[in-house]
Image 1 (tube, helix red, strand yellow):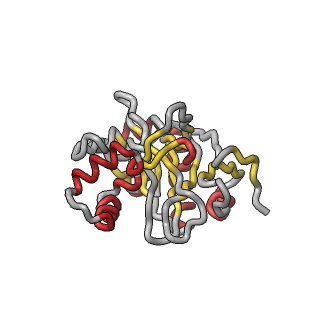
Image 2 (cartoon, rainbow, N blue to C red):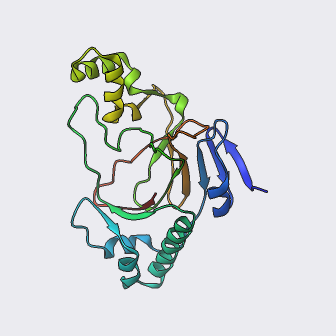
Image 3 (spheres, rainbow, N blue to C red):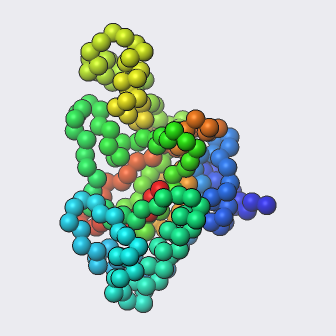
Length: 233
């Protein structure tokens, strides 16, 4: 029997990791959350890792070799356990320290970077898992509170100019090829939902076997001088 605390809008809260990975999305639910109050000093891990670029992946070997205080060791144990659980589930988790993501300025009227609300897409059935342990955390937004950007008339008109041909079928392929169709614009008075610190999330993505709408999410604007620590797969 699946232990569910309650359902709120598109979000279903679960009580343990096994329920998180095994509970299927259905109906309007396209986000699941394992709420947690984690112990340990995750900031110590962020401070001990040298960041030479805007984003760096931490290997398990590097994580294990860090000289940490007792609180830092508690944080490391949680990271290793989360990584192990996701790996055993068949996912391919990465542990990242992030100063900021690259911005997309190729099309000023239509940025396609992760700071824009977007959905993930895969040719096979899978889900997105993520947890922020330190720093700013991501947002999701109900599908009903956003509009696919390619359906907004003025944006679509600019995209057709960019495409430069009259072939409608080719235009639709162009939108998919350059990932324009993955991005959404919040409606006025939309109410984003912050994913919080320490919570482990499962988000529905766009794939051929999906029975629910993909979850709209975005990366947060980082706080100056505060790098993020997160796991994602």
